[in-house]
Image (cartoon, rainbow, N blue to C red):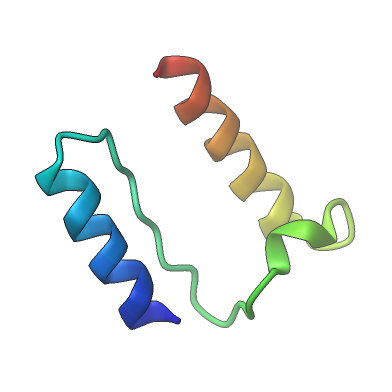
Length: 55
């Protein structure tokens, strides 16, 4: 999935889309949805919200 994500990021950037991409160590697919059980997911969703509001 990481490789697919990197391809998508590259294509989006090439098309002029604003992109921020972060890889979080030791996290699994879908970990964002474990809010509030996992502190990292809370932080990730906060960062996503900040990005969305800025764009």
